[in-house]
Length: 309
Image 1: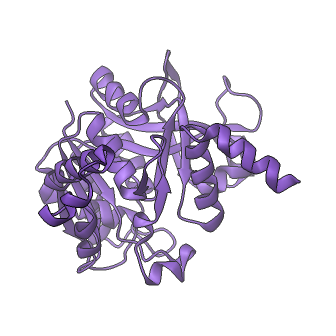
Image 2: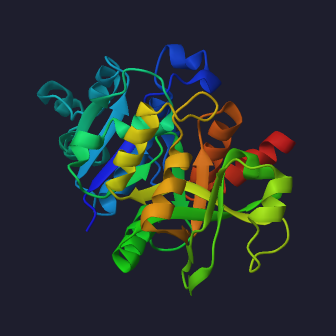
């Protein structure tokens, strides 16, 4: 069983500036599917813990962990008095205490890319495979099993690195790592990955990455969640030492491609939505998707009708 998760949250949030002058984007609030307002990072951490993860490494800039620590703490004895008749608040306080005890803060001292951020967890991972989630992505399952739990189940089945995938139209593949490979299993769809390319052009993808089982101009792209074996750290170390970069940064996708060649890796289609709250439009989309999957769905419809009138 995978018991550890790594969540990078060390970016400076340029796409959400100037709001990120005040607070890390991973702490931007969202109303979750249970109707409770929470920072984004709490929703992600809850997904990990509810899937069976016991220890979370949060990768942050030096000094920025104080913002997160202020959130992940329960109510003080004095504050508890104000919540005497508010059971939901007391329950959330207990949850925050539980999450606080599961989180270790690790520093990324230089902004050197996603791959470098993951590498910062090498010693903490202790030679174990781990779940990797994005600190600015919300995942909404389309069945009764959470997205994280679907990916963890994939590892139990194949015991190899698992790269969660989502079928993606051609016009969006510039945003994602894109893969292909022979189908191994139909339910859920799982692939033995043979090609992994970071944000390819549509022309390249049409020629080299299209899977014959998919409709035209539909591709298998990263969902934003992976299980990685410890070999990823050796590969990232080689890339850092040899200054192997893409767009000036240490790229995780490049390392994943190498990991797949050395050990083999499985692409697993996830039944769910990936939502990037790291941009203004993405933030709006993420909140709408959460609202439409929660207790306020009917109210959202009413609000839309009011706005149209």
